[in-house]
Image 1 (tube, each protein chain N blue to C red):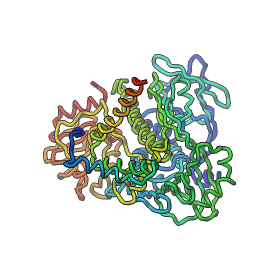
Image 2 (cartoon, rainbow over the protein chains, first blue to last red):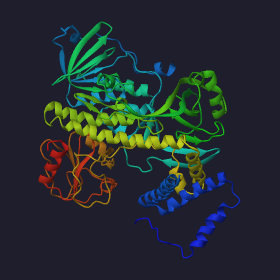
Image 3 (cartoon, each protein chain N blue to C red):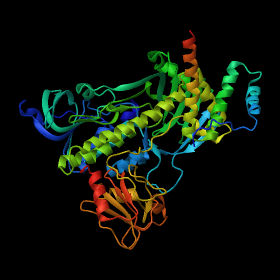
Image 4 (cartoon, rainbow over the protein chains, first blue to last red):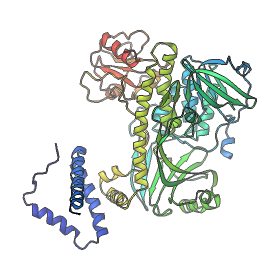
Length: 74
Length: 538
């Protein structure tokens, strides 16, 4: 099964909000610790190395695209 | 050191002049195979070749067995190989048998694992045995085999590749002489001089973190288990290992900082307080102290002309996975039957290429596994450390977290993606695939399948499960029949289970115990075709 990028939550705002609220009151350092654990928990739940790799590619491509845009603007 | 000299096996050997040294330089002695380096790999390879009927010259530049425990963990696979070489009983009798490991984080245990949780195997998951014992027992075994000529203080100083042989220049206490070998196998360790002589690179990664090995002698009540700590109270922020060896000797590994000064750290007066903190007392004596950095490297090609590299000379991995000596022994096991066939002319020289394909693939797997362990023990960045911390904390309450904790993944036989394997044509739910190692299981009497395999020497073997109509193995192939009136009984049903066998099923095993092919309904033609392929004949 490929990585699903269509909207899977009935209420996407609730999901986003839940993650945002989990970070409320945390320092950047604590947030990073939190995210590390969350990523591992979710990755294990997905349990499919191909889907995980696709997700990693998507997340990284977004960063690379962002860098290229910055460079073009400069 | 004390430990090396107090046991019964001989460890010091004299140089003896050989008549090869009297020959004129332009007419040197010719030998079929010269093995360089009398460590565990070279010794085992020489024994294997000699048991197959080859005459072997084995050279070593020293005159004694190396000091220090060095490799201590020998795998089930290595013991099964040593069974075939006639030395496993002695190793197991002296060694300490273990299969359980525990991982701790701080003060508390995260989890424990059992590397061989099932019964019905002749050999245990691992034994711990000082390398000097293993070498001494192998040298003793060589004394039984007139086909091996073991020459101490024979140091190879030059290698010249010829069309049909390799010319070696050898330095001895009485000067230099030359020898020709049709093949030379370099088992001369991580700092291999033969590797330099053929001009080969040894590329890879050296890790910055340093580890201290201390083998100490003490009476202690710790169980015979492998204990590994992340961030223990006695060694904050780093990792530590405790493992038992015979003779009340304990292996302790402590991770040091990247900038630790090796000369200072190795001094016994500096090691002692560290260990006293760990053990809670200082009633121990040092057997051996060494400091090392993790290194993962391999040669690009394991074969250079007629010089073949095996063991640490060809590949080097970080410890904590027992993948060094054990993978070298797997090299020896993989190479010896191929070299024997090539020297006999029953297989073409191209069969040797499969040694490079299979064992360099295994080296890549070992390097990958040990690099992952190293990176887990010594994270490279803040974020890696953070991910590791997340795994360690999740491991307290989740199974998936425990499985991600990496305190070393211990050696299991590699599976080969090999040109010698015939792909499955039938449906199998389990059992070893072509390219995988055979599995042990009990058979009638107090015997095991691995015993049946090694009897009368190890050659290609057809393991078949009786259905009344026995399949004749092709010429030169041994038979092991399970079940039926004439076959070995399978009282526990474990042979059939582990091989996913039905009546009539058959496995073609290579001389190194790897599966070449398997059949639900074997025919003479299919077996013969698989045999040709596995022998490199097509």
